[in-house]
Length: 114
Length: 114
Image 1 (cartoon, chains in turn purple, orange):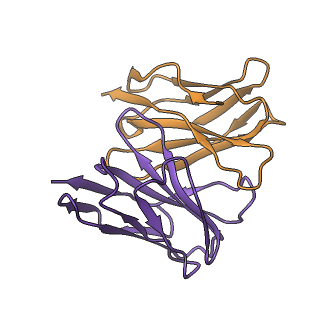
Image 2: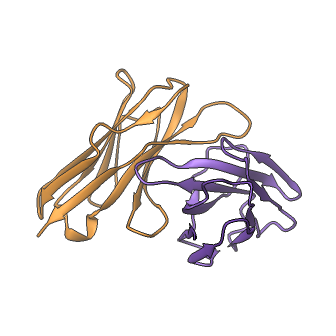
């Protein structure tokens, strides 16, 4: 897991609620990413950020929002607009943006909608 | 679109055997490949990587082979141990594109029987 932390480990949400997943890294990495993992599927990119105060949508951004106010933090908000949010969420970081540097992952947050 | 896939969803081996996990990729422009190991409920961990100018790379008990002719990648684990039980997936990184977002395979579940 390196220097990437995610919290909480488990999160339960009632329908109609927004929830925010935390991702922090102390690796001084430029780029950060959010992925969603569902059983039997590969990682799907939600959002990514290559620099502070800038981020781009990934393949499945609808119903999610992010911010990158600090280099070390990239929180993900799952909004009520996300119709099927139950999944395992993974945050990753990469040393240098715009390169093929290896991505390193956090331990994940499992979100369950009640 | 381009995709990364795995031939076998589940591989069962006996402790001490060698394991081979395969991955096919379709983007001939990809030039950097990574294997990750993901234990249940945890984030993916980097195992080994290889660039397209290489055919083989060895680590501790692991070897990655790259066959660019048939766009095939494999991960070999020597003397497989119960602790190797996990999902293994490959990722390919494009050689161009400003964001260099990797594409991930669905994964192969490796089960090691004592």
